[in-house]
Image (cartoon, rainbow, N blue to C red; front, side, top):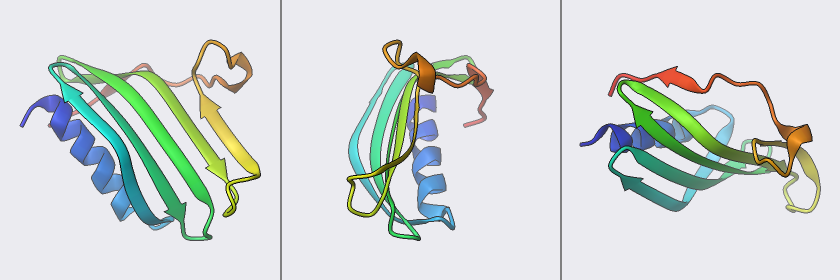
Length: 105
């Protein structure tokens, strides 16, 4: 199993094991040498909907998140509760986050 695959499995296990997540549906997953992508739709315990997307690269034993988008909606999917996004065209949504996270596969 590559480091990318290990990181993807870790994300999926954490989502599935979270006490605030009722259901997880993996929409898209891609692993290649040194990079990966995951898009998942979550139903939270209060029946809210959340979509999470992450594109990352592995640099040695570190994970660098290149792009992310997390969107939290009401149960109907019509009202936005919160959004986290590092896209250049959404500068007001950008958060200061560490660009490298230690990871031990």
